[in-house]
Image (tube, rainbow, N blue to C red; front, side, top):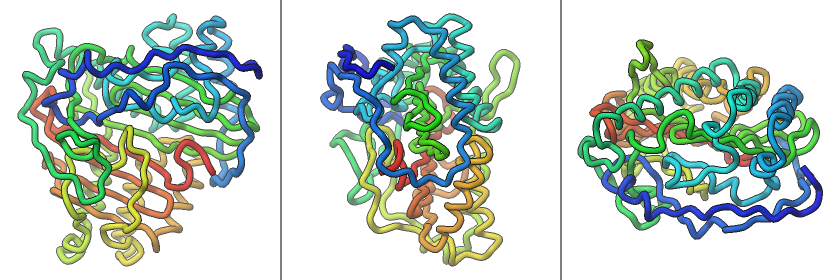
Length: 403
């Protein structure tokens, strides 16, 4: 990326044209188009002020894949995919809304050649573990499945979706004043602009073995913000979601997030009756508390039960839950991060609201530590009669990088 400033036109996000997609369905978070600037200027990549990650990052491998992808692009495409590291678009260009309700950063994979698309996916394959990459592929397949539902029925505006449920956000939860709890009206079903071709890739900062840069990849039901700084890496925030839980596409069965579902429910159901009562979080949720568009603040008073107060067997269940998110990252870095998070169990809480079973569309589970933050949110289906799930992984010390 050139060190001189180059003005780049970014189209403003327009919600009005797609408002009918979001209203009356469950799962989308509200997005303020006023927060996105019409133009941004690219600047030199800033040096990291502090790098406090756990180490173990396979940065060189990711940079190699990123450079190989960039080598396939024209100058115009490179200009579209490269951003200044601290460009505010990083925080607004990912969502669980479909495009164009919230426009993504970078290049749309569906607009690339086969060779460019393959090179883009190699970046994600390098950044993620085998488990994490397979999950990404399956989530994209789930979006293809939802897109297929619109071929024979009108599901894009929620008219044929299941009845929606509105739940009240807890006191102090970030809201936008709209219905549907934290983040506003819900949604998430099939229709226009769904499918694996509607995923985007961008880089914030020039990929470098020693500098600081973020790989941002996302579409409807997956969004990754993976930031590297030398030997350190953070995957926060990362959104993973799916509807339905299981499906068949092209005669093959898929079950994205199966490990996250099983481990989360296993952890919360390991609590005794008294612990469950103590772990119940005030209020109720129809979606994520700190999902897309809500970067904080994190709650100052954790809710739930202290993980270190649980038995070793129960703590192992919590670790198994945590592992299903952390292990989406490349293996060596994931192991170091997991060890860091487990060492913080004396300040980490697990809580729930609405329900504690996988088939309850009100089930909400949260893990809140001094670093790790996980939310698992069930909600009614928007395009099917089955459960619709959103999850978020954040790190209170390293969202989008370290400060």
